[in-house]
Amino acid sequence: MAKTNIPQTLLAFECSNPVFGTTTNPYSSARTCGGSSGGEAALVTLRGTPLGWGSDIGGSLRIPAAYSGCVGLKPTVGRWPAAGTRKIIQGFDGIKAVVGPMARTVAEIEFASRTMINLVNEEIAEGKFAADYVIPLPWKEVKLQPKLKIGYWVDDGLVKTSPACARAVHESVAKLRELGHDVSEFQPPVPIWQALKIFSALSSSEGYKQLLGNLGPDPMEPSMQLVTLGTRLPGFVTSLAATIVRLVLGDQIFGEIMAASKPKSAAEYWSWTAARNDFIEAFYKTAWEKEQYDFILSPAQAVPALEHGRTKELSPLALHTILYNVLDSTAGVVPVTRVDATKDAAPADYTAGSTGSWLIEKRVYGGDNPAYDAAKMAGLPVAVQVAGRRWDEERVIAFMRILEDNMGFK
Image (tube, rainbow, N blue to C red; front, side, top):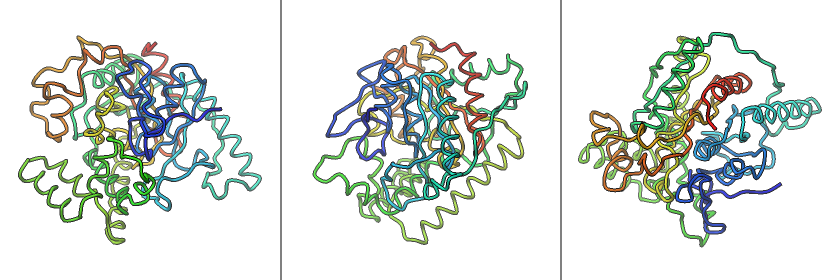
């Protein structure tokens, strides 16, 4: 058994810290393996271990799996034990972290999940795990119906998804239709980017005092700077800066997210908790009750693996995975293709007409050194994300296997 590398404080999707340094991507030493469970994903992909465990509060398991080219599953809160883990912010339940498996294949994910869930349920029957909030729900053997109803989305409203990651979804959709499934584009009842605003508001509610207090004399990693910026400034400065971003720079979305990222009173925290609950209710009523989807397919992230240091300015790109932490949905990632320098090149006017955050999109696609460059990214794995209902781990895994078996990723 080995403990693998993680980012400073765990609240980043790079994998670097002042103690052990930087872990690189299995496909390119110039790029990050993702985080926070980045070292584990890299080790799994490089066959250093057949199975790994990671935590996930905003994509910390799924992003490294997607970046590194392996498979990962984020269970619903309470389905998987978290005994032995430590919270980075004690007492915080606004968004709950979970533990889940990473492996090279979906079959290994299924084996790990079945084994762990059944073992835990045996111990629940003996009165254990009461303090770990694990629900008594044994593993269920499932067989998916021949014709599934699947929703999909490509863009989150914050940043236009890159050609490579959009192609991964569209090719998966085409294959699923070829297999006889009913696939339609999902129209969310609330803009997806609102999940990031809710996540930022809740997670920053006490000003990250516990989180930043753990740094001691260590220098802050660049990946932490944008995440914690709003809480490190006086409240009136954060509010003023957010207003300037919205009204002067004309970026309404980023301005709203920035304004939400500051310390809050108890009443403000409760208000954001209510906003989270309303968001969950609206999404669930539309996706699972009105549309009756079996699963929802999306990109794992707007871009493939970033170069080291890029999350200093691009931490909001975690939105695709954060969505399902806010919703507490079962979600997994599975690689389906690789970046193609020709197919996936972004034209100069790629973001023309976009209604997202132009400040973030400019850093992803604009300038002399954009974060997304299909030529430099050629060969990197590209994953899709699969989401299901709460407590639906068995069915989500079964659907992930359909994608793995039919998309031909090697």
